[in-house]
Image 1 (cartoon, helix red, strand yellow):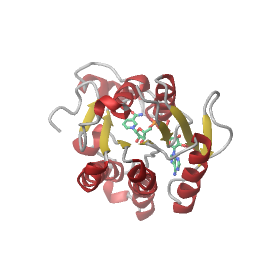
Image 2 (cartoon, protein in one colour):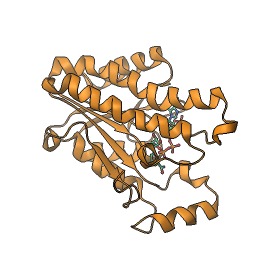
Image 3 (cartoon, rainbow, N blue to C red):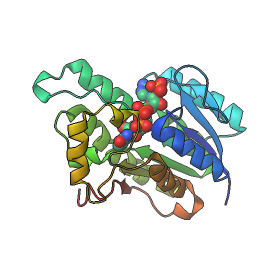
Length: 236
Ligand SMILES: NC(=O)c1ccc[n+]([C@@H]2O[C@H](COP(=O)([O-])OP(=O)(O)OC[C@H]3O[C@@H](n4cnc5c(N)ncnc54)[C@H](OP(=O)(O)O)[C@@H]3O)[C@@H](O)[C@H]2O)c1
């Protein structure tokens, strides 16, 4: 398998870190983005704030220097939640989630395709959520941001499919990370009961799907939404 140059946003913890480690183990050259401190042990990192275009562009330039060439695989994973009921949701709560999860992914994809078009090879993988297509009370901002990634991926697929570039969406269900750790116990139990697999997922299980989509074997898969959710979102 060809080792590719990979950039994983928000790869300092949670699902992003598992993805970065899985791709490095698969023989790719991996750089992660982080917002502060040092990168995780054994991984190269660049500072990046995905809500800031200049920061995204600078992070790509630095990553390309570390990798010795253009980014061939982008995993747009950085994301946040700011849950609130619709009637109480402020413009700021709505905008900040869209700006990070959707516009942040757009900024990274826009910068990434420059090198991918020249290389005539690219894999763009957006980390969405089951909530993007299933919906979730209290998460209108998050759900809208995550379903927006589907339109983004599908339009990129149609725009750049002939250039050897694929764009896909991975839609995890409930995965055990800091993001789900903060949920109240009774909500966690209710969610678990509604998941056909009867359990939350592990970050490694999302990483395995991303590893496949990043590989040369996945060249003919584009514009797809791949659930990794224990069956929670079936049909959505
Ligand atoms: N956990 C789940 O159950 C679940 C389910 C479905 C989808 N997802 C999605 O999977 C992705 C990763 O989730 P996770 O559970 O691993 O979350 P997490 O543990 O909270 O990590 C989020 C990552 O995103 C980074 N990030 C957030 N805002 C950013 C910004 N403005 N600029 C740059 N980086 C930023 C964080 O950086 P800092 O460390 O600096 O904060 C961190 O690295 C997210 O897109 C999330 O929506 C998660």
